[in-house]
Amino acid sequence: VWESSNHDVISIDQDGNIYAHSLGSATITARYSNMVSSLAVIVKHVPATSVTISNKEQNEVTEGYSLQLSASLVPENATVDKIWSIVEGTEYATISENGLLTGVKPGTVKVKVSAGEKYDEITITVKANN
Figure: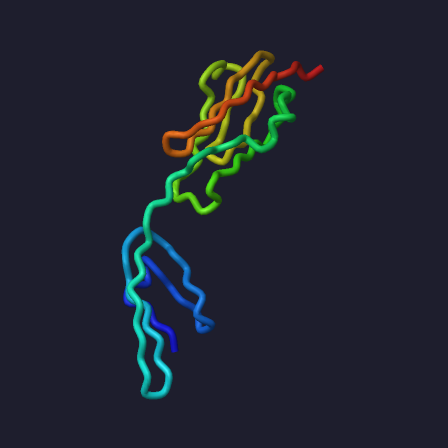
């Protein structure tokens, strides 16, 4: 039987797979018959060393339509959120917290995704809906 002393930080399934849920520490205990073994586990912050917009070839959207942008982090297990924003041309498009860009009117927007202190940018043209 596997147990975690702090389920808010770490959980463990009956196969012994450990899942981190938040920063902190917990003790994992394995019990079998009259044997017991424990291990202290610390979940630490993993900073991003880079963030890259994945679909930069998609650099146009028609007004009234949306374009889903995506970004990847290095390392993949980085514990920072990706923050999407429009840094130029906010009158031409909107962007959601998940990177969904919606064209409002023709123009050019510069979109930025940040992950901690790292960032990447893309320029997108909003075309008229003719």
